[in-house]
Length: 313
Image 1 (cartoon, rainbow, N blue to C red):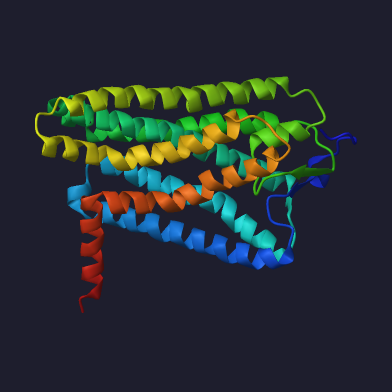
Image 2 (cartoon, rainbow, N blue to C red):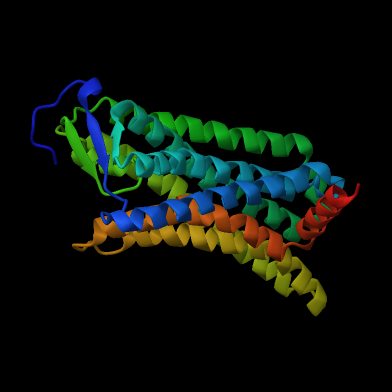
């Protein structure tokens, strides 16, 4: 915790220590991060283009997948451009205002992803467990309501988390063992009582993290039970294939969160936090389009059709 006297926001500086110290590694890191950013944008834009242009993909499942693609692009845009700028400038400092803005946007995306993955699980539950009522339950109006509620929930939770953090007193120079600003490291740096802030973050993590993870697990218990009751092997495989991509994304996302927040603390825990946080805001967004493209025949067919049309004179 900082020990010096707090200053006003214009003189507060945060130092992000997630980048490697060795100068020779910065060039490699820059190339790697640029590649990740471009691949993330290209992959998610391809999925969005396929969903928008192909009428066969105008279904609830792909509507929520389109929201996930937008979310993944937001994740990387919040963090990677600033990281690349820091590498170019050979500076790892970020202003108080920019740091709080990053906290707000990152919290928004993290909240939306938890809720969105839960809604996508519910969509698969309705499609497999009660297929005859699927189009009535997951109507266009209902999907729009669920999507808008998801994003509004993210906005509300990010305000609740970031606003109190922005009002805390900080010292002039604060070191964060991350590549970008998050709520938890900021609370550790404040030179005042942060019990209320920690209560808010714990409540948010419990509801959106543990709560929606439990909801997804329970939902898939019902889904698997319904799949096992399908008489034909081909039918079971087809039903499971519609869930496999979502299951893979859920395991990666929540696996990273569980490893980050529930593992025992150690001397290297802060450096490991930086690696894991980079994974779920940079690596997972670039992998999601690959997962949905490789495992989904409809998306692959649509992308191939778009590429063939572009080749025509």
